[in-house]
Length: 116
Image (tube, rainbow, N blue to C red; front, side):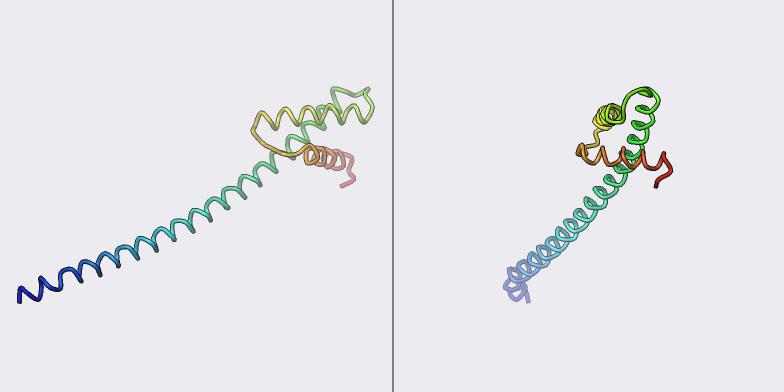
């Protein structure tokens, strides 16, 4: 009986090693899939949070420009609002384009005027 066990030992070891390798591959694949889904979830969540922050800062910038620069013309107020929003967003680490900032300020302007 012992010679049969000794003869089968290399085959059993090879089979067990192959099974463990296959399980490790499946586990790594599952971890990769979960990681990719987690990264996309957090990126979308961060984008939504940043968008919300952008609109809050744009509303603040509009209010700031309207109250502090009452006697200024519309373009000067817009420039001041853009400067304020750019500084505030950069302090908070939110990266958006100047066009996005302007659009958010314009939206705040339209909402304040009752147009939207």
